[in-house]
Every structure is written in structure tokens, then in C-alpha cells.
Image 1 (cartoon, rainbow, N blue to C red):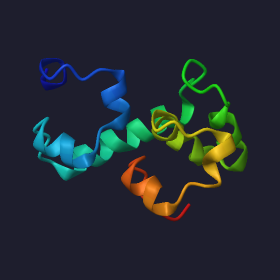
Image 2: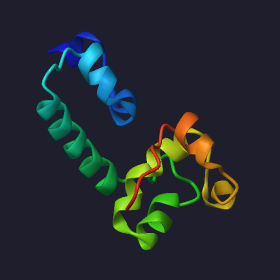
Image 3: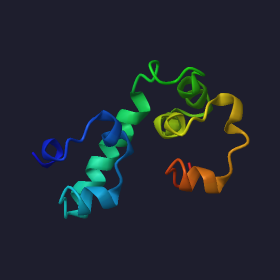
Image 4: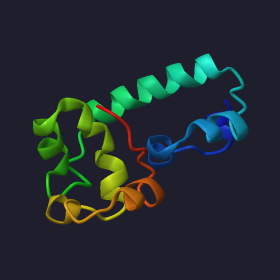
Length: 104
């Protein structure tokens, strides 16, 4: 109900953060937020990005490792395609693309 009230659409959903789930959507349980984010990661991993990914970044990331496809939307949303990905810094990934640097 709160998602509808705040007009959370597909774009917002794919970019949602733990703090937004807690603060804006009122999901106080950290376990519930973790479950939600786990399912969202699954959605991002298997989504069809053909309409917004002209460089086919999703499939390229998937060849590196299937779990890397989850970052496609954040990268494409920032205008990053396959050709310029190698020039992106860790700070740009974190700050501009909202991709936390972690271990895979």
C-alpha cells in the first residue's frame, strides 16, 4: 500500500535502498528489508534490459559471472555502457551508480 501511495514505479524500485525501505516506506524490520533486497537482487539479475541497454552490458556482465548482471540497471541509468566501463572508478561506482564495492 505504501509503495502505491508513494508512486514507486519500476525505475524507483530498481534503485531503492535499504534506508529508503526503512525511512520512506516504513519497513522497520531489518530481516524483512533483507528479504526484500534479496528478492530485488534476484529480479535485477534475471531482468530483461533490452529496452534500456543498447550496448548489451547485461549479457556481457553475465558472461563474467551471472551475479554481476544485478548491476546493469544502475550502470545503464548512469549512462555507462560496455565501452566506457573500464574507465569508471570505484568512487564513481559508489557515488554515481550506487553500487557498493564488495566481494563476489
